[in-house]
Length: 203
Image (cartoon, rainbow, N blue to C red; front, side, top):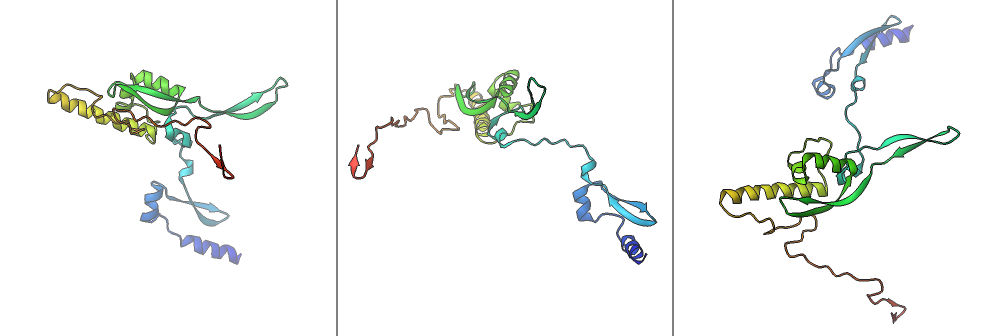
């Protein structure tokens, strides 16, 4: 009996509204008085009751154009036994053609649904400039490609305003490989071409 009275006194001394620091965190949350067994208690409505709108994406989405999500399902055998499994998106490496740069840019990770979305937009340039899809994560190589396309668009508009003929091959630098107009040929060593020394014997 004494413990219930002490509990009632402590709960009655609680504030009926959130402080300014907590109200900014929880938004429209407020305390609601509830009576249980003759004792006034307080409960708070949290954000858990609100519908969840944000989808959790994997780190793979930040490395390219991957619009499809990982799906879950079952493998069903002939005996109707179900085994849980996941269906990963169809992702591959591709280099995409840019009309403003007049060459292929890439490679980058892209899914089949991402390729369909690029075709719907009318090409890589329109996809990067007028992108209607909010699910694209602009990080990694796709961010470098988008910045390069926007830069080439500004250069083209400025040269056309000055009456200069536009040539995308002049002063072009690849956003990923950083190679200029004259491509630098890297040395390619075949297997066994370099001499190796093991125990003082070179072969």
